[in-house]
Length: 331
Length: 282
Image (cartoon, rainbow over all chains, first blue to last red; front, side, top):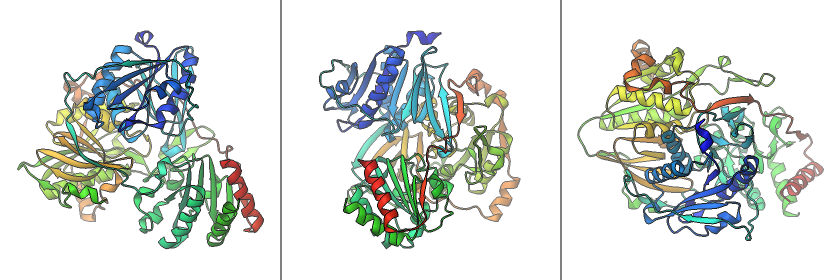
């Protein structure tokens, strides 16, 4: 098949304002495992303007870095990135392309896949190799994490997948690793951006963003009042955590929507999720049940949240939370 | 976020040009997640166990289109690909303010992944004629990919704005606020353009009884593969046109989480949990 001319693994190393995103290093770590299973090499492809510390990609596992550094690429315009990525993939024919399932990755990578007429799997939580068939085995959650599916792409090349940040762990950088940086001129012929960034404002959401947090303290209807969230903010500050909420708490106006976890809010997978006064309706569970450890505090012993909890405390949250804060402070 | 105010964002969108907008809203019928059953032993999803509804994210796309219609004048077409029963979802869309509805139904469309789905939708949209805006929801609650929107934009060779939480202006050009992970990007795009909107953009309305009654009698256009053939390469439909395959479906093991539940709220229990947290966090 045509796939035989495709070799090597690529990681789309996304940057924002010249700073590489951690998900690039995470994908390089996983990509190295996949590359050894396929006995091939791994490259990072990085587009942007004034990109810092490109050699870090080599220290984190890349054998080669394709670097397109050009002022036109400063504003992350989808049309330009799509055009350049398609051009590079057609030229070098990697068999696998991995990208972070970030807002920008989710916007641009499907367009690349559509042009290349190849398969793309969103939000993979596991990647493996079927070495005989040189197939990427892509495990992804569906139905809000209630079902897992293993997807392959036998008929298209490259095989493409996006992976949420923090699903894989990056390796410690190895400054002695050798690699090659290939500078590529941006192909400005035949492409104009049909969108224009007029202005951007950083940090529209205050404090720690829940999608990026290692630890989340979440509150629900059981808090009874918006001001009782102060207690959760205190618990969060002891742990260095972000504060999230279930939909009822958001609908009551106690917490802004950007903090909502669940089917119609954010999907999160922190190391530790502490659910306080959340009963655990399925719409909430689908947004957080893949967390490594779940601690649930609720006065209803039959609350469904206890079915997914690693540690459950049946009791009055207004007593339990202050005690917990106290214990954690006096560690 | 006072910085945002430098660009004049008005509550009511400004319209510069005269003609009425042609808006297309792709949507999907999904099982109601509160009712869907997951068969742990067979590793299967029993969709028949649940009532079907419009994908909740798509309601925000439809509401965006209907609000534009009310403010500026527009013709709104809802389009879906699926089995005949998806007609119910399209009637719901008509009740919520869409002017016309198209269902793409054929066994040849079955088994489509996001590439084949977006391709089929693109062919049908070409058959519909011109358009100014395509408005999509963020993702579906069953497939969870969010890929059909940007893939559709690419098949139609139009620009795409992702994570739109507010429209600033629509006319010759469109200006929108895109929520890009903690940054608000105010972006201008030429028309036609595909917008993927977030839940923040509006609160979808509920249809009235009168609207529902009207929608029951309204016509839903149904197109099969043959009817798209002059706009399509039929080998790109359905499973044949899908590069991906599902190798296996399984349910995440429940055993992984051996929960320890403390039923008495005493000093000791809280200490144990606090210690477990500290040990885990290292």
